[in-house]
Image 1: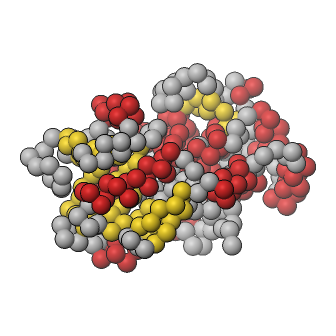
Image 2: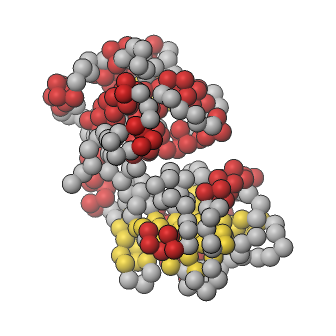
Length: 339
């Protein structure tokens, strides 16, 4: 059964701390996004909450105005990722660090942009440009302004979008016909969605870990379609790893019993290497972990690595899939291993 397109404050303590008015507004935004074809399966409540808030921000909606006042790009309204963070902190009882602006683009707006519900104000600008804004697609704005209640609005959506391919349907078709199969821990078969990022995850599991993992077992794997594609809660709890519900989990977590090393691995295709901030975040979250931490950023090829080389944190490792038997060590008094 698919999860409901809303967050239940009775089962989510953090969400319950917000005012009822803000809770209802965020849930309405999640419902609207889901109705327009944004998939909700495989997301935590916090991931859905942040998506809902970012969606509200780019259309300038908050508890003081409502969906009938939603703005779009034709109104010359768009917000940069930093401006979205400021909007969330001001209107939705958040305290998000300004340094988290890249998460807005890579995580919170990802599906909304892919579905063309949210558009870039300057499509020719670089993805990480600080001046690049995000605004509501005018095509969807007219529909969103008519939102009154969930019951009446869903019928309106079905009529208006009868001939529109929705993102959730597209992703379902892709998962049905173009799956990437991966065997982990010598027995369990996983099926990734189609993407170069997921192909890289397959190579990490099947090539990097057998060479450099000291018989490490994979304890966590997530992909775009299913954030908890594989999760061994019991094994992670045994080494006092941080709460798996966090949005800061790396792409792959693996543990070597013989070395007592925990590999925290990021698969980088277009964004997300382990830079100094990312390394610090993971160290703080894993502060009670009894295993020693090994940070690894993986790339498919050298060309992709060159794009991010200046961002790689010291005291981490880099693995490039087209040269699988070699590692690049960023400083430190030893080669592969914790520092």
